[in-house]
Amino acid sequence: MSEKKKGKEKGKGKKGATKKVKPYKIPNALYEKELHELQIELVKLQEWIKYKGLRVVVVFEGRDAAGKGGVIKRITQYLSPRVCPVVALATPTEKETSQWYFQRYVPHLPAAGEMVLFDRSWYNRAGVERVMGFCTDEEYHEFIRSCPEFERMLVRNGIILIKYWFSVSDEEQDRRFKSRLTDPLKRWKLSPMDLESRKRWLDYSKAKDKMFAYTDIKQAPWYVVDADIKKHARLNSIRHLLSQIPYEDVTPEHITLPPRQSDEGYVRPPMNEQTFVTNYYTSKEATQKAIDNPIKTAHIK
Image 1 (cartoon, rainbow, N blue to C red):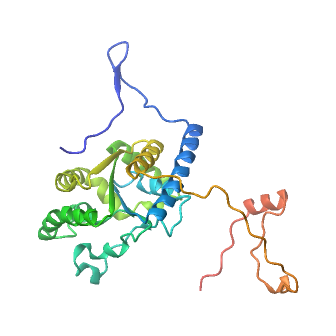
Image 2: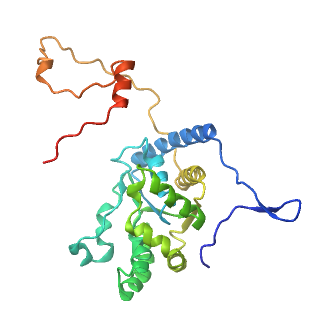
Image 3: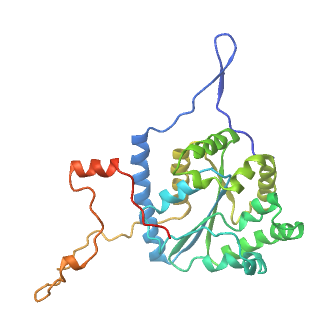
């Protein structure tokens, strides 16, 4: 069954006309408080993963502009990148395209004490590669056959594999795409692939449906996240992730800072021999001057 459009709930007005009911959105203050509490738990989970030597893989897939990156940022905000690295692979090289398809993902799988987050993964073959014609029919069907076995093999080897699909309605995706047109901080997110995906909404829906039919396996099921409201998607995803790995709080209760080494006999080099970054914000007046003046860049030769 193809991914349905998730519109707002409708009710009847006085004259029988349909009226949109605005969905509940968590207040900002409550969102920030809840996010902070969940991030504390994520730190505890990180310490537990290190302590027990667990190996965790979390896959994030879904529509373009579904909010995967925002969720990943909130998960990793206070975690160590050495314990919880994010893997977002670029377009495969000529050499990589000649390898076994899963080969370029294998080196990024976790060692003991690591949780790896895949910002898109081997499922590129079932999505963008299939829809855009970047793989042959034979390559696609081989992926559909081998992917469940590849994931079962990971699980049998002791890896905890968690897969998320972020579902966003076409109306909300369209709104987010349009907002990127005018936001200089987000304009880079509108790649040619994003624009093409907008035209091929139905093709991507069909590809996702078939992918689920073959890869939603008992050992590694897909968990669908309703991503139309970003803040809800972030909180729900983190809560679910925490629920998937039983953990205990093993963080040290008390840490005593050691005394700092004495600097007796140490002569610091002259400060004027060092190149310092200009401090533009030494006073209220200086701060306003910095704000009013354009940024000076180095000359491009």
